[in-house]
Length: 208
Length: 416
Image 1: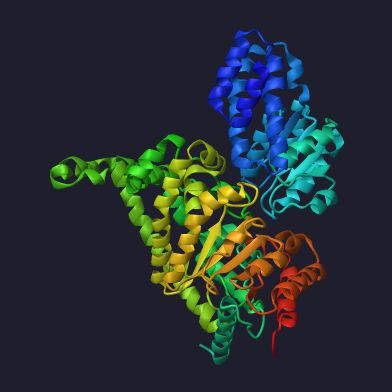
Image 2: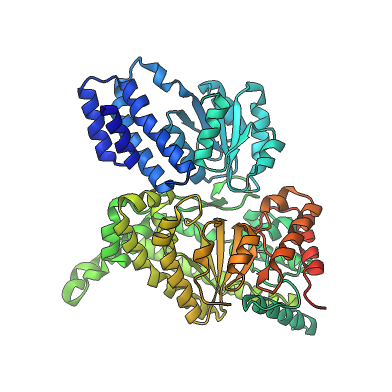
């Protein structure tokens, strides 16, 4: 019941209500992992589904994501040792070398975090070497590359090649990117927008 | 002006004007918005183009010697690096400041230059907000302007407000502005000379008379940023609408004054935040379109022609775009079903654009030719169509640009 309240408040995008409901659930002794999985994340899944069906749009998704974040901030400090929550997977995100644009990348990050993934953000202007290094360090299952310029698309190819040895899955996206380009450079997938990027991440990880 | 250049100039301009009026010209006008392309093509770096006006001019000379579009761009899109450096402009990085590769294009850095709790302050007195908050946040060298509050100067108020000019920070900022103005005026003089050259030597009409932005973007691009303004749609819709409303007459005035200053009627309006992916049709119809529509109408009333440069996908917005005066507006699309656009807008507005930049950068001349032919087949009949790329062109393969020019000139002919 309390978990449903959290979920509903999140779907409404009501940050304050989410916080109140999370506090109530914690006071009632519910497990932090249940609050996250069956409250917050399950709410975000509804948001994702409604977005795909075009029932809601980016503004609704973003306020839900920020409500989710507010709820997570309350629960996370209590999670010590409760690791199975974070095990949905880790995604390494970055805009490729020479490209300083981050709007698209940041939207993807917001959506991935909202869906329960752990995200490492490499920022902008990230070289192939930097990606390789970060993969060694953080051991992500998926890497997401972003580019806005036709001139920096070529860097995606370099980065995909550099990451090949590591066996990590690579998805790419950005305004000039096409499915064909992704296939040509040997990326594992192409995402048209932030929600598709989450679907693709799930698909690449074999999650339902 | 050589007789040949004069004739070419007039023929090009007529072609464009006919297409805008939804009449069939002699051939499909060709109006590619070239940004960095001429500089790459001529083999100078972006850094050289941004810092050495003469090199920029030489690069364009080479471009116009080899390509003859019906509307052309002077070096205005190669912003002057020295001027931006002087101001310590925060929302761009370019080779020379922040970007190492001299051959990389300048890039826009989006941040929240106005926070969510500052709407009231903006609405209360936009001029003061812009001067005391937005300018210092946007330009490091204008930080001193935050100490000025001239709205309090009335009657003996100036006893209290004018002494701020004695502060070193204020004086430094004003000195920078004097230097900026000198340098900027040099750049304007250079552009003016180049415009003459385009007309007289190359016979190419200049594409632009002024710029503009949708009132929503005025707020979304430079004040709030993408994610914050989308949240505002849900979290503070009334304030957001009030701010959009407030910026509408300012946006109209800025574009009309800009066109008056140059004496040229084409106003390029760059659209950003209203794309299909970022908001619903209802939200577009409430927050984005009404002010943009009013802006377009006022420009047309003033005798100007808005070139609405639609960046991103607008496939779900076509019904709105119909609501403008007939034969007075150009919609230049990036991601669009052009067949559908022709069907919906064909009797109302001239359409253009859509040749994918990725194709121009990575495709073959044959693929470009095929794409352009399809566009001509679908969009050209009856007039009201101009050939343009989807987005501004940077690093296209020269042979692909040549293919686009060739096929438009040879295949896009209405009458000999």
